[in-house]
Length: 439
Image 1: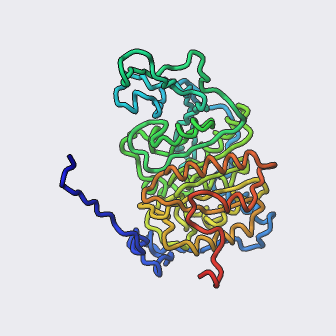
Image 2: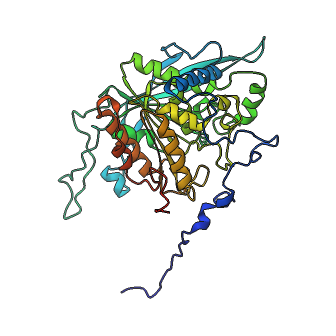
């Protein structure tokens, strides 16, 4: 007998006011020069600050200038052997398709299998003054493709009737995690890591492993495994702004671990380097792919927008009036990430992101800076906004990362065609600005 009670769920109506996620009105969605800093920023330039021609040679020269501003006189690190490790991590992966997990009656570790995880560390040192150096360590986790490992969920023959008791059985000779290809994905966490030292907070690394990629996982300075107190990460603005005022090349604390990890990966035989990251990790991906041409495919997720957009969520290293940004601001970084033929970047943002860099109300302006960046590059650059109202790597983002990486790997010379980026799934932003007739 059905209950006569009716429960109504009232859902909010999606309307234009949702675009004002941070108190912004569409007509006020421009950097006014004094939104983030009391001293009045002057970093609101919409496009490249290059004061010379924008030929490939000029962009290459700008990249060299940017490298010098980031790494200082000593240049980018060249060593390829980790300072600590690699050492095994005795951990496992919980397989979500395991039958007892779906039933909620798993025994201890019944749906868990080892994933062949190792970790290693880099040390980065920068001179603060004539008598003091600052050294930070960066922990990196290396996990291998686990796409061939899964439990056998076939029902057993014990029990009676339709409810036969079946337990997950691991194959006697499973395809354990192993090096399967010459492709590596570097995944970079953001500022949101506050739950201690871990290797995969939101399951993105596990997902990449399960679809067939080896991954090296990096975290931000003073966050996660790189924090003295992992539950209370320190503010980058509080730490690095005073150092920058003293002339310290603080940006290398963010970029050295990436460059060193690529050096190490190539020493292991990896030839194709993909990089992706969320939030501050998306910002790091944006900068790293601009300065390191070994990164052939990059996916910054909710990591930046051009400097003339209104913003409210920044860390010091991201400010548009930082010294590095006067060499090459964000649109310049986008160009450098796809400057050479065969190098490509898919910038992923979210329509209703509750933190930063939302797309709602901005589609035309997004398409405009995309057109400008693409006019400068020989590779592909595109911004894809996916539906979502959480600052995360959502399932649509993951599909885009895997799909476009596969397209890149299977395209001669890594050359993606216009149709490849035009036909990406889940994107709510257009590839080009609308014509007058379409408005």
